[in-house]
Image 1 (cartoon, protein in one colour):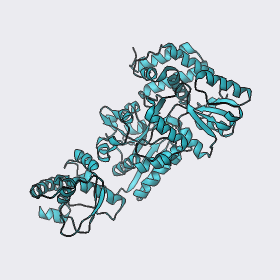
Image 2 (cartoon, rainbow, N blue to C red; image 1 turned 90 degrees about the vertical axis):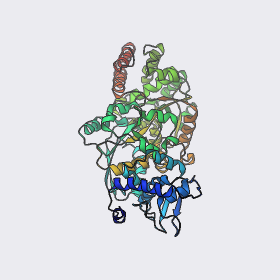
Image 3 (cartoon, helix red, strand yellow; image 1 turned 30 degrees about the vertical axis):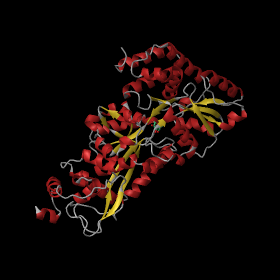
Image 4 (cartoon, rainbow, N blue to C red; image 1 turned 180 degrees about the vertical axis):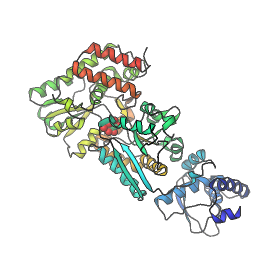
Length: 516
Ligand code: GAL
């Protein structure tokens, strides 16, 4: 056994099992006053101090068997900062070595998932090779946000080559069709964008994705992601993605100068909305712009009208079967949408959401209903003349969605993915990403001062508003229902047949086996 330890070419499994036994037996008798490590800290081993990790664990945690937590934390630190020691043998700790003592919460979290049969948990491998990151983030703001994450990843793991595998098309309408066959063919990208919520069902996660519960425990994410979001992220008892943000779907963006010139205030009700539209139309300005070329944007606008007309509870009930799709308020929502279409740009079906945004930048269009990635896009365009308000009727409601990254079981560069997911969930990563992306961080401990005025207001609203899930962006329901919903609204956009659309919406709920 000695030879095995000295040579350091031991089998991890033998090593960890034997080390655990030897160490706990040897030091159970050593009484050292414990000073629990509440904060993480650097610790330099000095001569004559304990020379095994379990003694150090006892010193900081009062528990010798917490040595794996110190070993894992130090080895992870080493990956980022080689001045720390890479520990391979918990029994041979040399003077002058720099160790990283994790805080108690991290150590407790780690010890919950630590098992000698997963020795790889002890090592923060220095990733090498490639990391293929797949997303649909190509528009202004989206691309910049993603680059913010890449920048942090590269600074930590300079030897990894990031492959930015984007498939353009808002809300992932092309992307999803590309990723699924790759998963099924066991040829997935290393990690890919996934909305929090029932969207994951469409990827058969139990077959194709790795659950991330251990990583959540080790990183302490359950303490920093809000409970509403954690609920959304959990599917069949597991976490399948690491969220990078929270987006708001129900924002009415407006051009401040146009509104000021016309003496208008952002409308709070649908009646006010149509009055505003009339005034703007009379002045030769496109009152509300839309670009529904991607097939999802009309549904996006409509889901927010639904929330505005039905209110939070009834809107939520649509996706659980509690609110019938025959409700007269639904008829009203369809009529509001139909009337709105009489005020939109006539070329709406030929452009994407950001294409429609150009009307506002050019001072030719006054309003757009779009998620707050529009905020990121405006920033990327250096367009600052915009104001925001909840979509009429939705004050106090936050129609929410979140982007996460997942871990395909057949990912080729596994260590690199874990390192990526850690960056995604980190405070540093979320601050870099969201300040550009236009979304609020999914962590509650990010610094609000880093974010623009709109985002600070969204952070406040998130805390006080009723949170309801977006359908179009994967939170409320399964992908097949989202597709049916989009199809109905696209047809309705073309035909304007209210009763046919309502019947088809009801039918979609039946097909999804939520309504009878
Ligand atoms: C959403 C996604 C956002 C944004 C938007 C437009 O589905 O969650 O991050 O990218 O699509 O592409």
